[in-house]
Every structure is written in structure tokens, then in C-alpha cells.
Amino acid sequence: MAEKLMHAVRYDSYGGGVAGLKHVEVPVPTPGEGEVLLKLEARSLNPVDWKTQKGMLRPLFPRKFPFIPVSDVAGEVVEVGPEVKNFKAGDKVVAYLGPLLGGGLGEYAIAKVSLTVPRPPEVSPAEGAGLVVAGLTAHMALTQSAGVKLDGSGPRKNILITAASGGVGHYAVQLAKLGNTHVTATCGARNLDLVKSLGADEVLDYKTSEGAALKSPSGQKYDAVIHCATGISWSVFEPNLSSKGKVIDITPGPSSMWTFAVKKLTFSKKQLVPLLLAPKGENLDFLVKLVKEGKLKTVIDSKHPLSKAEDAWAKIIDGHATGKIIIEP
Image (spheres, one colour):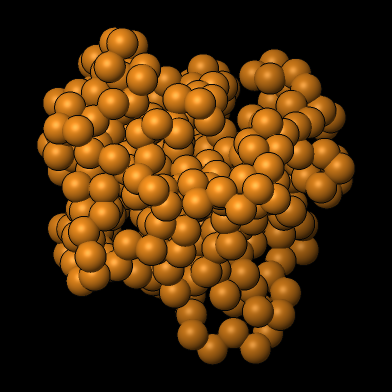
């Protein structure tokens, strides 16, 4: 029997940006032990996707070329591998494919059962796919690094969220407000009302002098900063932090790693904490359930068909999306 082929978008080497993407026909993959084959209904892009293509994560990712990028998907199980008991053909799911294997820009993709969760009918494929890396990053930053309890218990914390209208930021605002928090947020002028509607107590336009200085309009000192923007130095954060305030950097580069080391070595009470996502299936399941219950929503910047994946790629490189960029079948 002839091998079944699928449409996919991949790149063959580092660099190239949008022009480096190629539309190809490749064999539909076969699930191994502990894996499921998904027919994809939606994928969402993250900055790490274009950064991987650019070579910013070499030599770790991608593992080999050619590479079909994108990790955040929603789809329908069409085949299960050996030893898979908890999913069957026809199940609707949300999954994290991971940066090693990727595969999201194909019609079909392989997902590990440990990072695959059910998608209830109340959650659309686009809403589910949007959640994965961005939602898990926001969840980890708030619950593990900042110590916010999402059931509303515990002492009140003052939280600052930078780039609050972006992928991670818009989830972080909503999740923070499930806890006992006062949330200050920064974003561009066009998104002030949106971020307020997501629950932020006060919102700053980052292009104003107050916004650039990150000063809380009500004079709050921040116990934690969920730092989703780039290009803000420690000297801007430091005077705005409470005595034991933390800056949690979700995209740590060399300068933030240096600051992290210096603050540790000097026993500073104010800390910069680099965040490296450790995805867990139970946390993804928790987030999907919040969407089902109406307590969390995915803001969708734009939707693009797989045949025009280049348009979505250009948008994620540009870096000014409001919420999540989605690629549908």
C-alpha cells in the first residue's frame, strides 16, 4: 500500500526567516509507544519558534534538519501507539509537542501522551492551542516563582506584568487575578482597554514616562514582576520592588543571567529569577478546565490557514501580536 502523505511547512537550515519556510509533502508519521497521532485542528505560534529557526537556541534545537516547527497544537486523535490506554481515536485534545520534535506545521503530528490533555467541547481548538507554552509559562511564573495561590488564599501580593497584551502576558493578568493580588500591567496604548478588561487593576502605556519607569499609579511596590517584555534594565525595576521583590524573566538572555548571578552572590534580597519552562500535563489540563469554566480566555490576534503559514510567521517575528497567532487547517 502506498505511504500516506501530508502537507507540511518546514525549514532546511538556520536563518532565512519567512523565505526559509518550504511547503512540502511528507509521509504521515506513525505513533510509537506512549504516543498518539493527531489530525491537527489548530496550532499557535510562540517567539521561540522563530528564534529556533534563527539559530538562537543552537546547538540544542532543532535536533536535526529538515525541521517542521511549532509545538502548541489542538487536534483529534486518529491513531494510538502501543501501551496507550487513556486516549482513543476520535478524542479531541490539546498537546505540547516540544522543541525537540516539533511537527506542528503539518496536517498530522505525533504527541506524547504525558503532554496531551482532553479538550472539552466548550474550548475551541484555537483557544486550546493558544494555551500551551504561553499559558504554562504564565502559570509557572505566578505559582512557582512568584508564589501566588490561584485559589485566592495567602497574603496579598502586588504583581507587575510587562507586555501584558502579548501571549504570556494576557494569560498572566487573568491567572494573577484568580489569586489574592493587585495587578499593574504595561502594554501599548492601543491595548490599554483590553488589558483592563482582562482584570488588571492599573495599566500603564509603556511609551509614557510613567510607563517606561514602571511606576505604579497608586504607589505600589511590586512583590513580583512577570517580565514578558525585553530591553528593560535591572536599574529600572529595582526602585519599584518591595524589600524582597523578584523579577521573573521569561526570556532570560546573557545580561539577565549575569544579574541573577550577581544578586545571588551578593545575597541581595531583591532577586532576578530566570524562568525556564518545565511543561507538565496536569498544569495544561488545569488551564484547559479554567477556559471551560469561563475563568480564563485566549485572546486571538489573528488566524491563518496552513497554506499561508508565512503570514503568521511574519507576524510572530514582528513581535507586536495582541494575544495569540493561530494557524488553522
